[in-house]
Image (cartoon, rainbow, N blue to C red; front, side, top):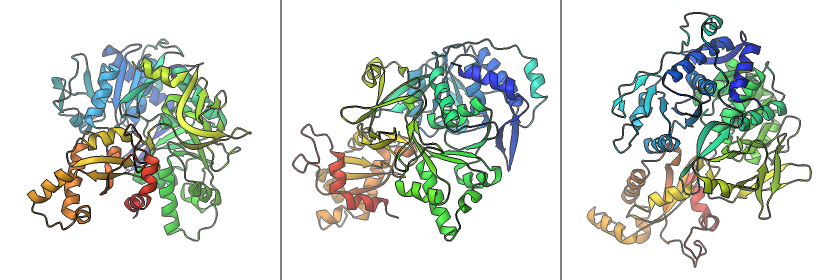
Length: 555
């Protein structure tokens, strides 16, 4: 089994002068060859080595998708170091935890916005942690200024890529297939992040299997817009690109994806359900009577596969795309499985399912309906969490926490979730228990339950603390004639809006409450909404308040 650095080195040797990347630069896309990419990768690898980064050291990166993100990833692997890819939208406290927990020695930021998050005086770093930025940054972290990462060349290159590489000494293999390549943090059911340890063998085996399943070749062009810090884009966009030597284009922004498709004419596209639903709605509004095939034309006219992952794909969306002559191929996986476990392909798909197991991967349904999987894609474990590892991987089988059924011919259907994790329509994993715990720290709130599975944003049902609310009504001299009126009074709702935002200010944007409603009756054992140990019965609460919850998502 190859390591990522071996995969990269072989690709440069095989495809050197060919175009590798299309990178947005201003109003244009700049084509970058494999040799030009390699020149920048090796320059950055030498710089990392000058920072005393070697095999097994952790390098954290907090940056949005950009050319530099890819260069740093490849450079880290050339040194046999471990890439701790941190999601850019996270709050400073969340990012700080991952830097400290992983033991990263070098932290690379995209610029001033990320540095500002880490300037909170509450955050403490060891003296050995050094911060660098791709863009000029005036912030001071860890008792010193944030230094600049050396320019990688970009458009203003000083010489040919081949000449630059020839002038630099080669890098000897510094990692084996079973060594760690990355640590990615995922939320547990309580919201405490766990570092998922993925090896080179994990990632290369999954990328290779995906490449084979879709028969990806050097003639393909894939547009990537999902965050590279998430394992979906990391494996299915970035590392499949290395496997087959195709072309990869970085989208300008989320708002420009469709326009970029029309311009670059990709053949492959990975996205989350929210993106495909949005495209469907916009297409319907402006192309009501469009003939079959018009959708593909608007997306460049060359798409041969659109893949959906990260969250459940609504059946009506899948059926609509199929009717347009552009089937949506749904897959299933999780960070702990590198990520793909099963996948629909152009020749084997069935709407309502998440396809069949990739080559070399086993799927089994446990006695309680839980999906189990075994194979080269299963993580080594959780960073510094042997107990959590032992609980998740038993006798070689990864317990996914999801429920499903397997047909006689191998198609997997997801039927529910065993663990208390919400997955939004945008593919964000959210731990509702952690958010609810923060909300109920607020004196105004007696109980709270958070929803958002398969939705575009989170909502909450809030049970007020009647005594504290009464005090506030009196203090603010509000005219409230009844308990029912208090639940919808604009000034009361503003009071709760401010309290909610304050309690959740340490969380990322995707973990904020978009809309909420106050309910007058608390959740209880008698109503079936609490267990005997006073845990929330989410399904029962959702059923009892279905109309109110739907109203929060209306419009």
